[in-house]
Length: 245
Image (cartoon, rainbow, N blue to C red; front, side, top):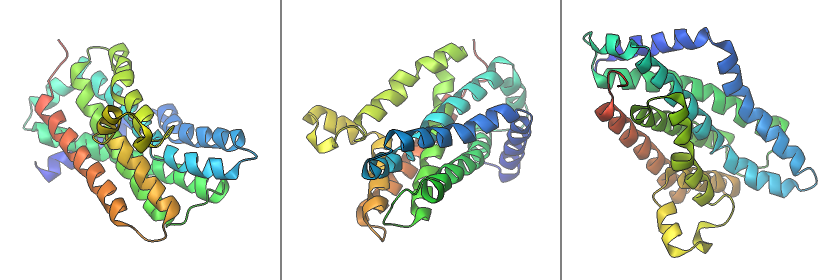
């Protein structure tokens, strides 16, 4: 991977995003609006909002970044932009790294705004540091970016990208422990949940919710999420195609 080429690719993607203000605003504001909606759903149950709100801070970034990244990458391929870029002295790792860096920066803004609103405006009550909450949200957003880059290689249209949502995202939401403790699930489902990265995002949020200092489980959750993001990025580079047939 060449650092200069990776940064140049990231700069190009960010310049393109700057011309699509509506998408950027929706990407940043939708998680915030959903958290506000959830706050009023639990209007008389502050403890319920604290429990689910913290978990959703680990889910919203992954879902939104997955959609935006996969669709944006697919458009680059179908328009022939990827083919032109890969005809230059630009490696697949440079391209994937540039996209990951650009969308990762956008993810950092999204995670920061959502976490800030949840803690300082919606009074989300956590025991640990807000920075630890932000760190998990950011890693989850980067993981969503990596999954979007990977999945886009197998889609031929934006409609097909959306069809990957029930396959890649929905099972993780159902099995991550948001609706029921993972230990109370059927053994097979519990084993499946143990290999899904979103489960560790929700677990990490729970650790920050309950403990003042980072625990061993919290460090494990961060390591699993970071490792999953790097693995998926590597798979995305390996499966990257110049264009959609």
